Amino acid sequence: MPNPAAPPPSAPAPTTTPTPALAPSPASPSSPPPPRASDRPLACPECSGPLDPDPRFTAWCPECEWNLVPAEEAAEETAKSAKVLARERAAAERTERLFRDVSAGRADTTRRDWLAASALAVPVHLVTVAVAGAGLWLLVTGNTPLRCLGALLLAVAFLLRPQLGRAPKDAGVLTRSQAPALYGLADRVAAELGAPPVGVIRVDEEFNATMGAVGLRRTSVLTIGLPFWETLDDQQRVAVLGHEIAHRINGDNRRGLWLGSAMGALAHWYDLSRPRERVTGGYGVVALLTLIGDHIGNAFLHVISQLPYRTYLLLERLTARAGQQAEYRADELGARAGSSEAAHGVLVATLLRPATWTVTSRLRAEMQSRPRSGRRDAAQGPGADALWPQLREHLATIPPLERERLLRRSRRAGHVVDASHPPTHLRLALLAQRAPLPASVICPPDEAAAIAAELAPHRTRIARALLAG
Image: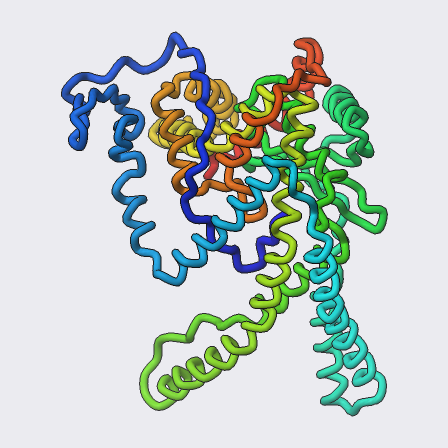
């Protein structure tokens, strides 16, 4: 799993690997009326090719790719420094090289890199032990000021300790008695893949799905983002379960306690030592001295913070190849569980995240435009429950041309789910190269209906949270 506390690496630069096309979804009978001819240009200004614009989406030309990336987004790319672009190109080259190796069956988890990363984690953990030991020694043998320093060092060591985590107990947790159908489906997927059963399943409001482990017993926790789950069909949901459960058996060492806790400790070190915001305001000599002190302090912190920052980047670099290979393996296992077609649909669905924002923002605006006396009832009644049908309807009416634009744009921008994943278009390309797999785990309609009933209370709760903003 990604480390949110650490400085995120830059996204890879554009690559040129072809991306499989996405089959269009059937249009909904309640879709918006077709655009008028005066709304958008009917011919491409670059190649004069015909355009078929939809007023809800970006007008672009599939022949010459005019306006594939809107001007405001393209401006952000051109504003990047030469150093950032060079780093992104280097990362893209490494990613492409791994993709070619995996495609040819040559890739394997690099033992040398794993050994180097494990060795690098040793001094990281030793620093934590040394800080704790120094703090305890000062607390026992020192005078009052030294004991205060010892207590501070113990507090720092506590922050840097290996984070085992705790089993979640929030409102999104589903017990086996509350969701027997969902747990039953997950257990069948785990048995098919040869993985241990899932320990805890929870749902939240994120457009994602993740697998983690907590506690000394490393209890597995599967978190399903309901907005993502609602965009998928039944077999795509099986493929998602297969992909996430596969993380327990796909050899991703970054998820282990040794390397994962070392990277977490480095992230804490960086957070503690990074430069802070300068104090502003005030006049006279005191304000001037404060400003000078802030400059000196931040310059010192910048130097100090470079050690954990660079060490984190090095650990990430050493584990990136094995981690991305593990993601490719998880995609293959997800396809084995839910079918290759379903796994392809899941990856394409990751590109549709903005659709949830569009529908949520539109429904929230509609609710806020109502009379104040009815706003509370709308947020707790049918208004919130209408989110999921509107989301599914919106996705069903996204035209094939817009879906094709999203796929090509992801290829050009190197779209990734997060920094630990390979680019989505490469994952799609690898699935397309493999022999199509049928589903080994089928989710029949009655089981899907039972799962929907188990998620119904959470569906309403999460819709209210999303619409509350």
